Image (cartoon, rainbow, N blue to C red; front, side, top):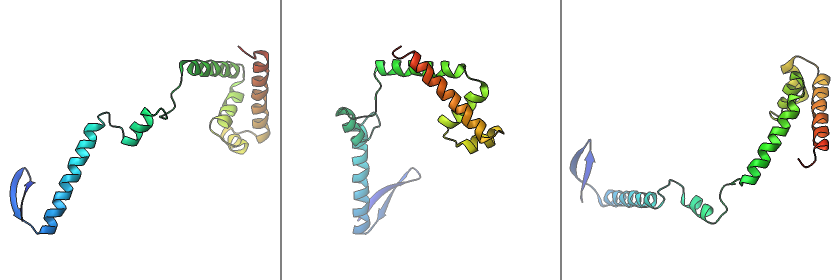
Length: 137
């Protein structure tokens, strides 16, 4: 069978076997189907993502109220941390955000594990006191 292929921008007619012709035909169909799918999903999402989004089980979308509550809580936490010493703040953040152990923080800061424990406990007490004094602000 004779097929025409593009090679370096030139159209060439080549004689191929039936198996090769069928393989090239299937490849053309797959390319055509892919182009069709891409046209159907013009925004670039996969089809299953499109279904999940239209069915309402897409990615978490924060409401304006949730956003404000999260921002206010963050502001309150930062206000408490501003009332701590630099060492307490650094040790607490390494523990709470980075998940480091007392020993890792002690090695990083050049202090004892007891100092790290006391710093983290002090920040925890300040947080508890702040939120006890301001229950529903």
